[in-house]
Length: 252
Length: 252
DNA sequence: GTAGCCCTTTGATATTTATCAATGCAACTT
DNA sequence: AAGTTGCATTGATAAATATCAAAGGGCTAC
Image (spheres, rainbow over the protein chains, first blue to last red):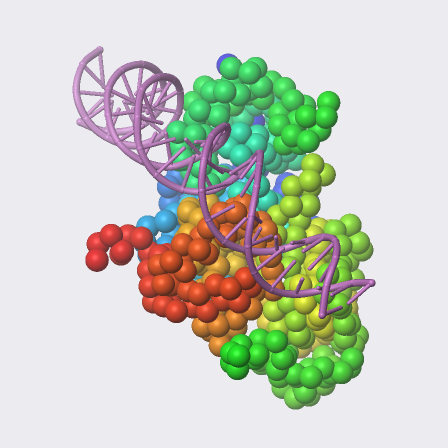
């Protein structure tokens, strides 16, 4: 039906269980960014191979001992935090090239859950070894710091979203963020499959699933997007962006 | 009047402009945590001295080049993010021993503003030099990673707060968090001065200032706290905690 | 010390989002 | 192929918070 959408389903790489960074299509998005061939070979040595997960499987759970961080090689994940009293907050969605598990460094114990939202594969990066190697390879050390800092900056963006935006603004920001990330990976920025349910989107955005559904419907009625269950086509990216700058919208 | 409250106003240390980590009362809360005397001396060498800020002064602004991170030696800060369309989200409040500026590592440019909420002092920690030293001192490297990870975990907690809690729960969580942090620094956990306005609290908690004010009044009416402008006394910490676990509250 | 200003409180009303409820749709199972 | 189950949509109503407005109090700067 929609040929370009299939790009999202078929991973860019066909992963074996042990794929070297140097052979990986994602290396420019991922931890090896900027390494020389020689240094990348040393990183290859360190990486503990891949791990495949079926949809619904946990990569790690809150409370488990922290040993590795993970690079998403293919697939799609969510991370969430649960409290004793049953609150559940999705803290992020991760796709190819992104790093998972940095929450565990601080206490040596994971503080959130990471779940595959589709059949996925990750690279294991033992953290102690990574620290050892990064003290020898300056650009690796610096890039690791950048990755952690980027996560902090991303979190600030989510706080902004949760703290200051209304429902439709949040959803617009969410769609545009996905669009941009798919685009950066060579997929269509305008048409993609959501891997998560309305409830998971709602949890991430601080909304109830009904509110998410209604906002989707409203966007569709306004001709901004077309929605069919989890299949999204963005019809008017510029206008979707204006939803995020209400001041301009009012002035214009 | 309230002798123990003065603890919050008089800093634990009387800072000169150049105070060595090894002499600093905050070393166990701050970056030098766990270092040997020898390694701490090397860190002393690196730290570029202190900087004093008057209330209202910016430590750094979004858009400025990133060069250093900062350790709060004394005082109180807020960080906030502004968008073009005028949204303003307070992303955190920082007190003695806490690290500021890690948002800038990712792009070499600061992405938020840091403002002193009272007369304050920070230590400058040039980041490139810190990376160089941390590649030689493993425990320093690891502690830096822990500090960044802790920031990520803290951010997840804020997302949980913004995404799942109602107004009074957010405020209770905020007060208990402050209480615990003051306590960790040797101040009273039950009585303290807020350095920020209702509007800043509201921005942090995703609420309007009036909602914050009303929640304070309600807490006071319920005998949980006593409020007089910025002066807070927590009268019933256990009951304040139960506000955060509504499930238990309903069961009990 | 005092004037001015900002911050805070409180009330009345409006808006947004959640909740409750029912139906429809689609994918998976047997 | 039909039944089951979970997910999504939509409507009606309720609850929470924002907005608008006014007045009081305390801090700061002169």
